[in-house]
Every structure is written in C-alpha cells, then in structure tokens.
Length: 253
Image 1 (cartoon, rainbow, N blue to C red):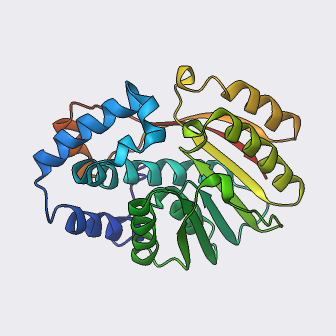
Image 2 (image 1 turned 180 degrees about the vertical axis):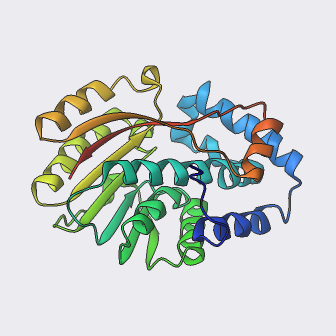
C-alpha cells in the first residue's frame, strides 16, 4: 500500500510552500551543498549543535527546512499513528520545536485544537509559526530557552520532545526527565523522539528505564516511506541515501 500523503493533503501543500519559500534565494544544488555541511554537523560535530551551528548560515537554514523538517514530519506522523494513544490529545506542547514540523504532525494526526512551541532560536520560532499557519493549525511558537519553560500538565495535553533532548546539557536533560514523568503522572501524554543511533545518546538507557518503570513504552521504528521528490533530489545532491525513516521513541500516555 502506498503510504504517501494524497496530493491534496496539508502535507503536500506545505511541501510546495516550502519550495516557494526557501528556493526563492537558492538553487537546489546550493541547498544540496548546504545540506552536506549540515549533515556533517549532526554526525561529526555534534558539540556545535548546542552553539547553534546547525542554523548558523542561510544555506543551512534552507537545507534544514527543505530536508530535515519534512523527514521529521513524516517520522513523527508515523510514530504517533503507530502508538495510537488511548488518551485523547487536544493540545500539543512542542519542546524545542525547531521549524514546528514534528509537533504539527502530531497535532494534525490527533486533530488537536491548539499547538504551542518553544525554541531558543529566533529563525526556528519564525519558521514554526509559518508552518502552523500553512498547515492550518491554531497556536503559536515562542522564543524561550527550555530551562525557562513552565508546564501546566493536565489530561488532554500532549508534550513532545522530538530531536531535542540529545542537544541539551546534562543537567537540563536530567531535570526534564523528572519534569516529563511528573507531567505524565498529572495526566499529560508524553512523547520523546530521537534518532536511532544509540552511540550518540548515552543517556537513553537511563531514560528508557525510568519511562518503563512509570508504565510507559520504548520503541525503535523503521518506516518504509518513499521520500517526496524534492527531498530525494536534495539527498542525492548531498550524497545521502535514506532508504527508510528511522527513529526511537519513549511514550507514556
């Protein structure tokens, strides 16, 4: 069965809008070169992520928006669909929202009435608010360091940390583990998504143990989802060959 969204879907409308928005100043080969540098930052120089190295140039920002954001959307959409939370989620709170793609996927999947995002990078916040508008979602992203985000957990609230926890300093990461599990105990639904490579996240085992002890679950995912045409083109240009979407998740809901 073909799992790609239909041409009339909000996802495909968003992809078309991404092209128009980010290829206004760059040709696809230029974005491909920037994507190669961006991928190197994620794989070989992860220490620079906390310094904002992934988004330090206009080319890298365009590459992130055009390539990684759609992949994060597709992956999060499949993870949420596979988990099939028994508790209804009416509002999504997206920690470290980036361009808003992962949180938007969850909000659309569960028809949430509202989404709120937090990120410390001003470009990411502006991009997330644009993403919400294009996808027809009610809500807003705010510029805020995660050390200062306050939670008001309650039933119906879905708290997402997608591709975020690994980039936090150790002390803040530890604090968020306690806060997320406390939010779950107070009725919220909690979902953490990260890349599947364990060597890049030595903290994962401890988080996994705590989520399982709290009645949650831990999963590794591999989705055979054909990439849209633009993302395939950029991947080839950057020397990447993503044959499947991979992720792992911690879920308590």
